[in-house]
Amino acid sequence: MNIDSEYIDGVKVIHFNNGKANTIDEELLSTLIENLPDKDTRGLIITGHNHIFSAGLNLPRLVDYNYQQMSALMRLFHDFQLLLLKAEYPVVAAINGHCIAGGYILALNCDFRIAVEGDYKIGLNEMVRGINLPPIATERIAQLGLFEDHSAMAGITQPPSAAVRAGLIDAVVTEDELRNACQTWTGNWPGDKKHDDNRLLVERLSQPFETLYQPFLTKWFSPSAQRHIRDLARKLTPG
Image 1: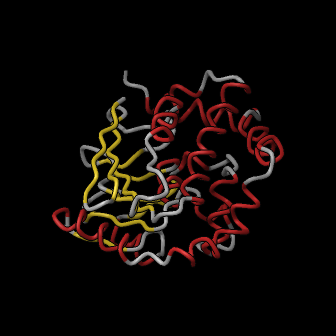
Image 2 (image 1 turned 45 degrees about the horizontal axis):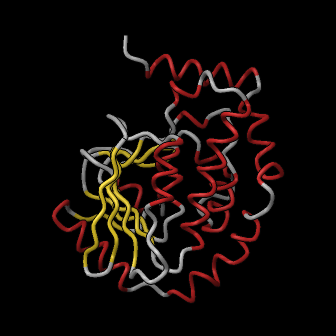
């Protein structure tokens, strides 16, 4: 796992690299939290590596997690994104390639989602079929009004051109334009509006973790969901 960061005109840019699929795990989330800029920054841009933003949680690793381990992972997943929603600066997801499942949820909780043109997918894949979405996703989806039925997003992945029409992302640019576009969006950020828009969302997501996540974790460890998770993990495991 590796994270590189730099400041460009007062905006912090974080590149995260966590294996071939740039998956999300405890180590990555802890490091991302440690690398968040202070409130005086002009903005934050988060991006992946090697033409992939993130394929989401590391499913083959999760199949053997017990309740406590999965709960600890989801607490970090939730806490990091809640910090993004509360940040006193604009946060842009610079989507440089596949942005799926937990990777898309992470991008969803940024203020803006800017994607490069290309032949790749954005959205919630079959990983979430038969598994409740976590509150950090369902509450944000409801706030943004993406789908009246949250479950309608399950299994939906689209190329960037279709994703922008569906409202899953805000803009599509060329690879050469990505950095400048993200800088422009941070410069056009209406800060007061973010806090007004997110106030009720942050309040709901600041409830005790156990209260918020018990339904998700109960579903995750149900026999039907575990069969589904293990089937998908086998597909993702080489050999």
